[in-house]
Image (cartoon, rainbow, N blue to C red; front, side, top):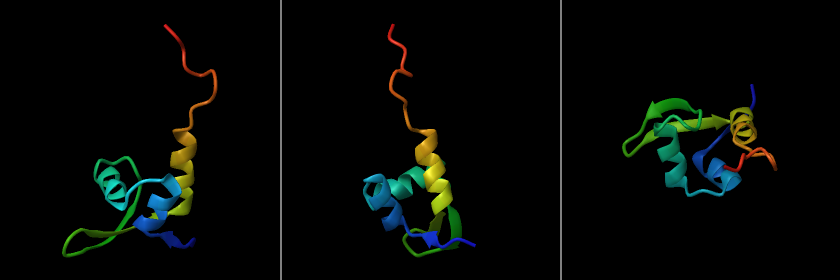
Length: 68
């Protein structure tokens, strides 16, 4: 099994704040693994493969946007 990433690692990869990573998790945008419920927030981790797929799926190609 691959090593799991922490929220701060994902924040660095995606150039986001850690709080934004948690918000996107709760909205269902970023796939994650919930390990436990902490006092302030859930203990969650991320698979590197899921983050790579997320970035790839949301990458916009040049010329793919149609002008109206």
